[in-house]
Amino acid sequence: MTATRPRILAILPGFIPSTMITVVKPLLNLHRAGRIRARIVLESQAGRGDIEWAEAIVFCRNTEPRLAPLLAAVRSRGTPLIYDLDDNLFELPPNCGDTSRVREASRQAMLEEYLRSAALVRVYAPPLAQRVAALNPRVAQIFAPVDLSLVPPPRETRPPGPVKIVYATSRTQDALCDIFQPALAQVASRYGDRIEIHFWGCRRPASVAGRNVHCHGLIYQYDRYLRCFSRGGYDIGLAPLPDDAFYRSKTNNKFREYGASGIAGIYSNNEVYSHCVEHEVSGLLVANTTEGWLRALGRLIEDGPLRTRIQRQAREYVREHYAQEKFEQLFLEQLQGVLNVPTGPARAFSPQPTMQAGCAGRAESAGPAIGQTAVPGLFRRFFAQTRRSLGTLQRLGPRRAWTALSWFASDRCFAAWLSWQLSDSGTRRLRQPQSHTR
Image (cartoon, rainbow, N blue to C red; front, side, top):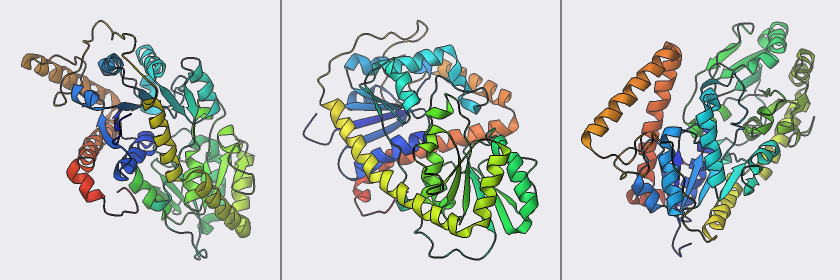
């Protein structure tokens, strides 16, 4: 490792909550603190110049086979890479939305190549650590953070009004609602105007209706979402989770968000939550039955002192165990660890025969034929990608196509914002004290 700030490159498939929480935000904060020099790019825009600049590279959820030349270029230079994985992408359920494409054999093979090539794989749950260890023994199970500077201070007293129940997700169609839906429908009918029910990011189930039911649109930028969500004054949060290999490998994101926001959570009694939630102390753990959810909802609605006590103790636990600063310090130590291990060019990795190895300069997109610089080739790739994109949008239908286009536009705008923030002029501006990233 050089005596100056190490140059860290993150190559990401998009700016979703996973990449924002565990990669973008900590690298941006470490850059601002003068601990590293960071560069963060979308994998579709990464090029040879980025890879030659970097001393270490971070990937997160990258599985695109067409971009295998990126990994080939990293390995040929012997640059150490860290792969961050917060989901069990090997065992995706059928109803997992757009990530279902990751079940394709080519993407599974690409994921395994990334994991085998990593100097360190970061995971967040024991089942996933065991799965990854079969491919690469250099795996570390760590905790995920929450940025408490984004949430307001705890309320001194609860204002008068209905008890607010909330469920938050980044999936517009969320099958997990089915777990608590029958119980919540009964609660809505039983308590009427004594409660309010709020859905963030997804449409409400048809059975949960009434004037006390409110829906909030999906907010793409995670920091902005957490600021808005934590100021909603919610009392009870719902965190359903099935008990299978995929969901047991997830992070306890709901507990961190609910606890930080001063919300008393009801959590499925799954090891994701049972290892951090103490029943009746920092939350309620319930079986995934209508009776279990109905009983827990009734308790927290009726028992104000219990609800208040859980809210306070959950916030204290989250502050002690999941602070953003602790996560960033651990990330820095892991980066220093992989940089201090002597490396050389890794074993050759050849992309599929239809792909071309090598990376073009930064100005050229790292598309499916990276390294081809002739103008006709660029036009051919542009039109081929356009045809694929139009075909995909047509298959998705109007609603999902609009969501996909919104994510695409948001990613490109945020990538440009990040590029400026991490530039020399942006860095000088950011040296002024700030309480949060955006």
